[in-house]
Length: 396
Ligand SMILES: *Cc1c(COP(=O)(O)O)cnc(C)c1O
Image (tube, rainbow, N blue to C red):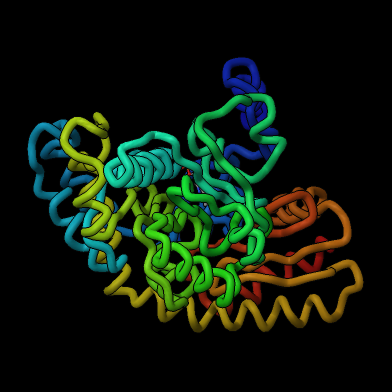
């Protein structure tokens, strides 16, 4: 590491609130599926900024669209209409197979809005505010108070208790455990279609379709959090499209803005018509013209570049290669995931492997202490997978 980089890291540790143990690298730019640090060292990126850069870095058409919007206007406030947000809303609702959208600035805010919409729906039905929401063990929904309240990781929640509302946790992929928690006050069930931070666990078909059926039968709002697993990551536009289910509300963020801070929650017409109304919810920045332009262009590029087709093809290749690797090694105990969201579980913490990989020019992340998470840009090629494996094997 250069003296310059060391100085920047020292400076950072003096002024930034220490909420992350960061890897010892200062990144400066990116191109394609490679990142570059301030010393000019290149890294093959299998993290994509935690699933944000689906299209990779420095995509000219995307950059040009954003620059053009910056030269017009970046913000107007939601008291007025703006064309980029209208275009983004039309394309995103179609892409997601939902009816209406509310734009936010982040994933956690999308989850907050989804909770409010679900609670308001129940309130309109029953006239009472006494609701319960069922969430899942090992889930992750964000760091704001409401989103944290339904995040199924004790260590994240405990220091901030009591958090908002009546929340209960069921066991993911155990339908009986969900049934056991349902009461006449249950207003919503929320889950990630494919759990990310919790360790890359896809919902089983029986489970998610079972929960969907219960929700339809009892008029409970089904919220699917697609913030990490959505946007083509599994080879479908949204992961729930892989199953025979229909969420009442879904959340999206991370990749949907292609790199600028954007999120959204989307609703069916039925829930939209019977939940939040003017005055119930708002945001200063959400859906501003810059965010709108980013989503609009991301949607176009997804179609032009046939991103989901690439995920199906390269995802299957990655799966095969990780399967091979897992069968060769005793320290790998499981392999899970869908498309380009895959996990390798080891019988030991993976922090050292990841640090070594970064030294060797490969960016990886974990999902829980023992699991390496593969979350590359969705435009990677089979050759990128091969290159990644060469470095990974050196680090094991
Ligand atoms: C990242 C993530 C969030 C939170 O999104 P932020 O933009 O960090 O607030 C919520 N849910 C899931 C599944 C996520 O992966």
